[in-house]
Length: 82
Image (cartoon, rainbow, N blue to C red; front, side, top):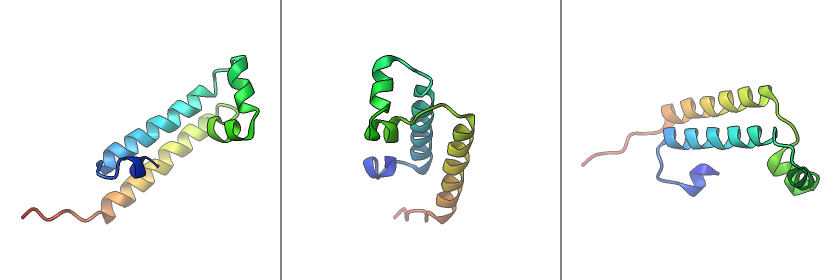
């Protein structure tokens, strides 16, 4: 999604923004105010905001984005500078 919004951004920037967005959503799950719990009780709210904080999700996001970053870095061809 981040690459779609910023197609000319560097791979490192896309990975960092993606990781920060995932971390923010996961940390937001610690916030349990009544109004946000009501949003999470809807289908779309549950899909976007999630239900509960898990350290394993943080680890999974980090490894997943890291692996994709490494793969894309190897597969990306350098641009010709003429």
